[in-house]
Image 1: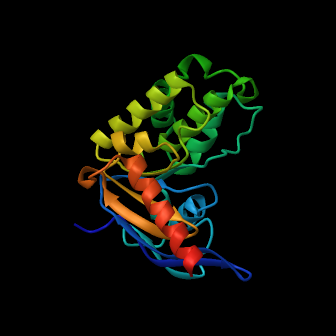
Image 2 (image 1 turned 90 degrees about the vertical axis):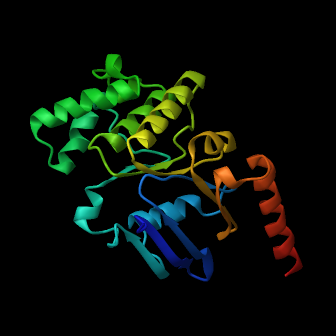
Length: 242
């Protein structure tokens, strides 16, 4: 099966500082992938390079076999950044309306998709409230709604559970499982190891800009927390020796 996301020897340097080093990954259609790592390890930088938001210094990124900047590719991708920039004078409904117009949806289809997305994130009752009246968790959920609004084939989520209370976390987790069941490919950055264990097919760990593991969840022989700490400590020890 051909990979829908492929990274080959991806590196990024700013000045004399390397912020990504030789990252290679591939994801299959319908796969749910969790990207783990300590703060500052390079998770968000990697995601931005995949999406074409930043240009790698070397290496190759392909989505559906094409460059991520290809318009046809971008139409099939949904993206929720960790800190979504929101026009807070807009209502939730207006925010989705604004985003939906980038995808050439008909008025009828956009209205249908807006209601669907708002229902999925539990914000139907708040659709006519301005975003400046939303809580942090509500803003997180409206950001997720815009990422899935146009029914993308691949969904990129940067820390989707951040700032959510237990009810919101359960809602988002159930939504990711529902999207998984429909065959969507999901790539999400997270610090929450238990979510990877319960949602993901595969995961990778990045530490100090290097990939230190890429595993199938079902093949793990130990709790993911223990595996994560083992890989991080091995990498730290190796770098200390070097």
